[in-house]
Image 1 (cartoon, rainbow, N blue to C red):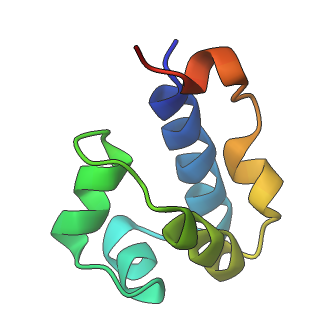
Image 2: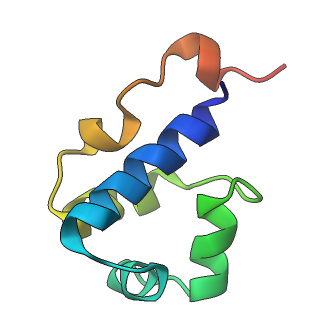
Image 3: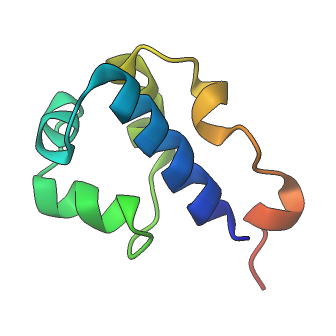
Length: 77
């Protein structure tokens, strides 16, 4: 399983706990819905500051968003 799949699942779970959809989540971190969707579905890489902002907006620890990602999943050849 790729790190993006793990990350996507963690983000979607945090969004569901807040009952937020993509548009609201995107707006909360200053992204367009299209950019957020591209990041969420792995078409574009997340920037670290976006993930930090996302954790704050969703009121979860940053570690919850990256939980389950280890160095072997995150390294791409």
